[in-house]
Length: 56
Image (cartoon, rainbow, N blue to C red; front, side, top):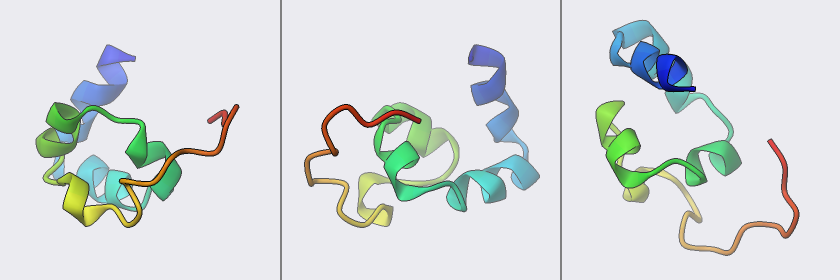
């Protein structure tokens, strides 16, 4: 998991992360989002509750 997050520091994987599903991005910590150049404001509906029992 940690290795996967560290890979996002490259530009190419940051672009991929921006194309990730909104639901997956909502589960990331704020500091991880900032690592890939995103903030909560960049994710639509991030303030809404997740679907119960949602799995990746």
